[in-house]
Length: 363
Image (cartoon, rainbow, N blue to C red):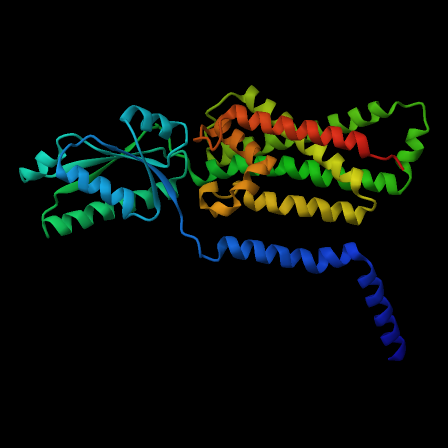
């Protein structure tokens, strides 16, 4: 047993002296449990950005407007004209639009039931739309109870501004496509490159007449081919098996696939440039991969994340790739304008390429 004990102590000392292994084994899981504990602990309530248009000049419209603006905690209300607020809804700046029509007070005063209009975009998120509808309906029910006790003075009329609804698979497919390109760039680029360098293969190749740029271009083209094949499989399976309807242009979608693959392959080269061992490359790739998987909106809408994470979410390239895929593939309401998505991805690609070119070593 003394021999086993000595081996145990020796192995523990070796493990403790390896700072990278110590970090990825102990500190990294602690970081994740703290991060996701803060996100999903239930301490933060959902918030919805709501447009409110009060076209009624009477007391009922004024009372409803006051209730929506001050008494409905999940709602952040923005008021304006019908044209402006409808435009904001269609461009994704609002989660829903409430319109109090003109003449509503007169209709209620005459003892008739009046309708409050709610407009939403079902391509944004069907679950959120149902929650929002329930909140508005509860507000109207509360007003009815307070004003008349039994009679239904106000009712909700729900209107969709699009002709198609975004289902769960429609929402997930673009996110999974974006995730696959991210993992192609991180795990299928950084770790193999570091392995080739660690084994001396890159050093031997650099000593041959083969220009280095040709080796790099060949590797990048191979990964772009894999990325296009991944996209074809994911989209094809979604369309054939799950009946996802592609709303946009396939050529534009292919262009986004290439842009996304280039961005994350460049990031993979940057990780390889600063990683001395395969283990370090794998650890750093995981450290980059997991936060983006859960904080970039590929599995659930960004609106469900706490507000304090907004700067982190906006800094991640996967956020913009998933948003661009949803806009082009299934016609989803954008979180950002498409030109912003493309510009951010290009910026990440250029910066990562420049830094990788500066610091990458062949041995």
